[in-house]
Figure 1 (cartoon, rainbow over the protein chains, first blue to last red):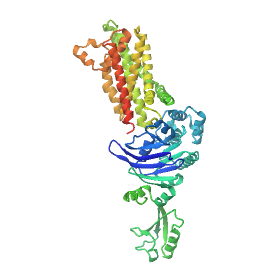
Figure 2 (figure 1 turned 45 degrees about the horizontal axis):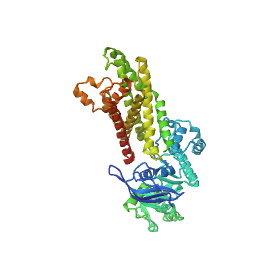
Figure 3 (figure 1 turned 30 degrees about the vertical axis):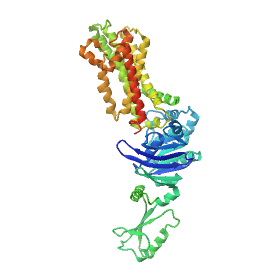
Figure 4 (figure 1 turned 90 degrees about the vertical axis):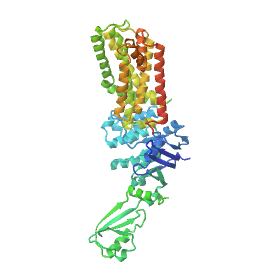
Length: 311
Length: 253
């Protein structure tokens, strides 16, 4: 049985904006699911409905077989949420804030466990600091501590690495892996393909309230992760030499740059052969640059194709 | 019942009051003492007794009501509005907590603060006038009911308000005039007949009348009616809060 089961879920806000359209999704126990999508895609609305922060307009959600509306106490005890915004008080101490969260979830005080959570998140030394004194990264760690302190079985991370430094991002990924080892199911939303690639088992792509696709990471990354190699030439070319006519190359308008689109997941990306062909054709390379397709670009493509490319 | 959650919310709110002790307690008490000194001692000594009660003593119940009505509304509305404003409300909404538990936590804390304020004001008043409470149990009952029902009313304002202006507008434009015109400083029997009738549409008249009766055994309207009106107001507020949580009005929409 999936740990989270979403059926025909829709949400229309009071202003008429339809944030979710008939979402069907099953999340398996112990997996890490990344929900990719641009701003306003519906990711946060989806998470908010499951956690009880937003009411659904239509559809049902069950967590471990229990309905999130009828059996909200059961489902919410199982869920932890790290919100996107740094929604924290200012004048509380870290320790008090974390204790407050545990109490809300009807758990009796357990100083030893709270200490463990704070130590795992490198917050132990800050336990007596006021929340307002913490850096943005530390505040995010506090939000994670607050979400973990009632020992949830399902953890929602809403854009956990948005605006955080590399060190914290890596720490966050390590923590996610550690939680998975402990059997926690993790659902995270992100803008970053690399993040999904690094830690997720499955990836869902959501846009304009529609779940375009959910697939194993490898399968989806293969389709999403295209890159371009920009080759700047010492002298412009008006047209490609005959030896390069069979290669999928584009030439910039001024003739200075050759653009080669390739799949980085293939063993043979074709770059090596291309370099040799360019050298044999007598073209002199001045500079090179690889450009990753941004998620937004991929989404534009997906939207134009109505997601058919991924289906 | 999630007792831990109630305890956490209650303690959090009470702690907030004590960390801002000047704003929470000192300010309303100082205002009331000033009213008392000006209207009770200075001007009051030149005003005739009302219903055979010296004016300085007569205004004590009204001043207590003035303070607890405004403070209950202010404390409870801010208590729930601020986490909505900062986004911290997500934590309460995503926790296994029922609406009644949330209400007990927030409203209970706001009502407690008002009760503390009322106690300090009564204590302070006893330094100025000879206090005599004819029906202490009823006095406590009226005090408790008023603190709870107006904290609930403040809670509704805190849920309804979209911004800080909204938060202030009802207390300033509705509560304050109703309290001043509700007989805090006078008996409505002192008004011309037409305004006496108009006053009966002011719910605060019933509160102050009932509360004053518990002190002096004299009331503008019958005590039973006062009690009924407070209970009715409490019930109406509870129903509105229940509806707000059920529909997610401005919370989960």
